[in-house]
Length: 315
Image (cartoon, rainbow, N blue to C red):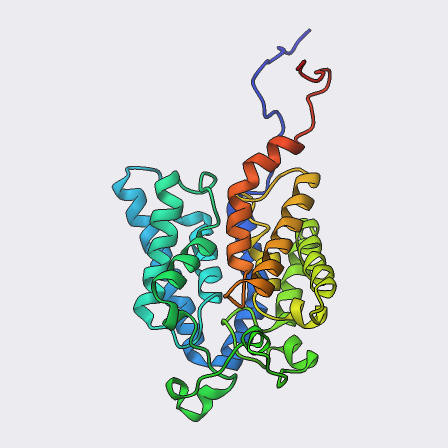
């Protein structure tokens, strides 16, 4: 035998797909929603995104430097975190709070747990929940779309669709307005069409599996109908599509097994509906994803297939 038999540990097959490629695809997928946010909420929306992304990238650079770890800003994960976090901001949010959110997401949720791949929850989701708790009024001050054109953005306030529903109002946007984004809300959540374009792109590029978004949205639809709410309005309202497509599918904090993905997504949907229908908060997407992130290790343990040739443990 001319050649030598080389024995080494796994993995034996390497993939050309790197973290940077995946993150770049996610960034591309968010562009339609970003453009819609700028159209509806003005240049300030773009400024909030840029400031949050800058805060995330700079925070990651400094944190890695202080912790004497290899620099990872080149993998673009900090950019993705910044964009997702900014998508959860109202257009009126002060810039300093936007930057603070980026610092919290990267330093306290991501880097203090070891960096990408080690965080227990989605950094953008966790930072948003922290900001909601700390700056409730600032984080829930909404404006009507196109209000920026009048130059009186700070003086024009509005209620989100879920807020209107919670208050018993019947003056709701139409389904068509919900789809295109003609409603008050966070920067990246209002334009459902833009989010769907991004989701289809990610599925086509095999960056995400459709299991979690489809099961999550379907659960909200069915359970809302069972509880007597308008199921179409419920799935189009709030940040459901943003959360289901871009946040609940996070590789690090969602299950890797298909059965686990289904359980995880249904759990997200059930918690979202329960919060919307019975809690004092009109929206529950962020909290539901955060709670299910925490349960992900247990879901994986329960749904992980047995190694071939290994039987069940004797009880």
